[in-house]
Length: 172
Image 1 (cartoon, helix red, strand yellow):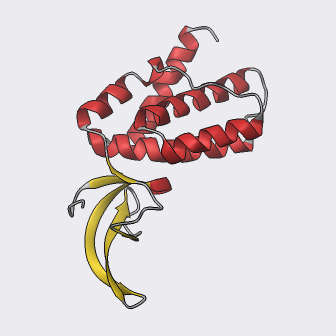
Image 2 (image 1 turned 180 degrees about the vertical axis):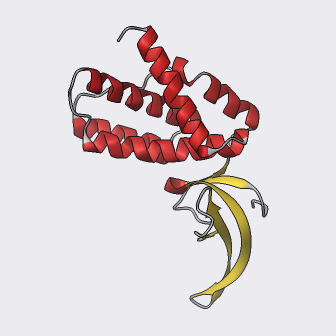
């Protein structure tokens, strides 16, 4: 069981702090619930059973691991780009649902890179890819923010800057 004040990654909500926990009566039985507050959403409280088997909840990465990923995101290997949009979307959604922080960083890098390429080639970046990118960024940036104690906006700005610089140095 996680402790009050701990940061955790909660499903598609991203990094949350365990604000509290309590016993709640549901269907005549007492059950322990976490009260989670997503990073950057101080007015939102998510209640989830401590023993919830349907939704993934895990401890966030260490500050050391966060700094390692943040510092080298532009050097990470891209995820495989699948030309079939439906298969690509499903593959990327699996990374969001089940992937590690490293895989999320690779996904964000891959999609931001493709977005830059699309802009350069005056092509559209698909709505599906835009939505996956938004979801992956939310998860990655919230976890990095909590693990390395940096503002969410700064995380996004610096990652975009690093990738743009790398993109330009490669002459893509």
